Amino acid sequence: MTTRVPASPFRLSAGAKCAIPLGLLFLVAFVAPLSIVLGFSFLPERTFGFTGELTLENYEHFFTEGYYGTFLWTFGLAFAATCCCLVISYPVAYGLARVFGGWAAIITLIFVFPIFVSENLRLVGWTLVLLKGGGVLAYTINMLTGFETGTLLYGPGSILLGLTYVYLPFMIFPMTLGISMVPKEQVEAASDLGANRLQIWREVELPIAMPGILIGVLLTFVLAVGAIAEAKILGGQSIVPIAHSIQHEFTYAQNWPLGSAISVLAIVLVGIMVFFVLSRVDLDRLLGGR
Image 1: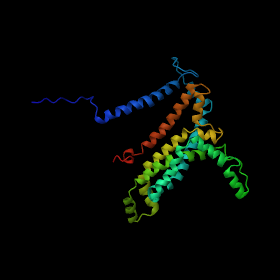
Image 2: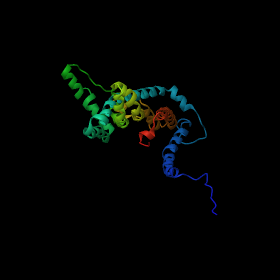
Image 3: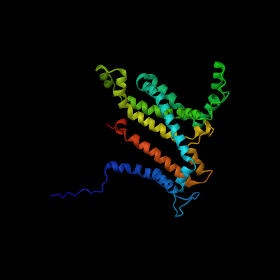
Image 4: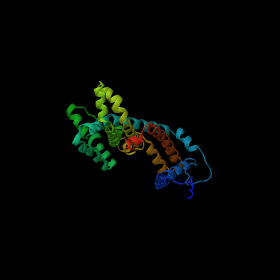
């Protein structure tokens, strides 16, 4: 007669064992640095180590020194850039998934290739060739209309243009994946049942493609919030983004606690938005889990 040994309640499943290396990497590379930043945000100004004294003055300075205006500009431009990318990307993504056929690979390469070039270099190209007074765009407008445009740089419009241009691929490709998930049979069935093209798009295509669209929106918005080069190169620092304020406090000002406090607030706000979006996305379905 064999005696059955009861399973240990602490025995890990195969999936949990496989997740241990990833969990350790997450703790070391993400949780530990963020914990240090959080701890620094409660230290007195211009201290570089734990002194035993904790304070909320860094968070108070966020409101008293006008950093909330930087947040409003940054999140506003990121939201506007995300909307612009959304409007531009949907027809392109729909074409890649449904229309272009054999040309889809070439068109995809056209959107991917600029990513391999330095972002700063591309923005400088926009500055010198298109947006600068006397550049190609200003010269063309002047030649066709006789209207002197001057420089198109150093304003919210040029920053928005740069954000839209740089982060457009990050909207297109998740959206293309979402649209490609729509079964053609469902579209044909809805058409056979008498639905018009708008009804098919609203009731069939859009709900099924929504996970990919939301992932694209999330990627674009988060990247745009953390952008710094567009404001420096195209905006001439007429608008100071969050990333530049954090960089300034950690480098030139040597005020790590205030920079940490600004970072924590930015992470919290972006994190709330991320969790809000992810709670409405079926990642298993999007990644082919079922």
